[in-house]
Figure (tube, helix red, strand yellow):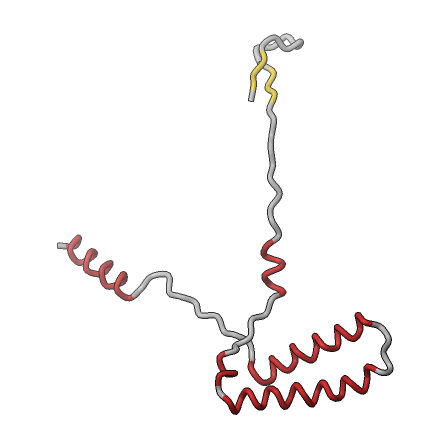
Length: 120
């Protein structure tokens, strides 16, 4: 900022010139909401893994028959993507987020002790 004396108006105010710089915010929140994380830990179990493979093979077999009719590559990719996501949601499921307590029980205990000492 700069203040310049001697504005053309007959007043005791000074002319103020300011240069502002602005940064654009990154749009990271929108991209993060579109992502889905799947719980892949059940796939370590052989029974669940076989169920997943069997379900996926059956759906791809149906898709193979449809490929002969669809010449468009984008529509094929969308069908493959849809099959994979639906299969993951059915067999494996979405990953559940765990939220931590913002104050631990140990901290609550220390707060209570401090309040008791301050009362005495």
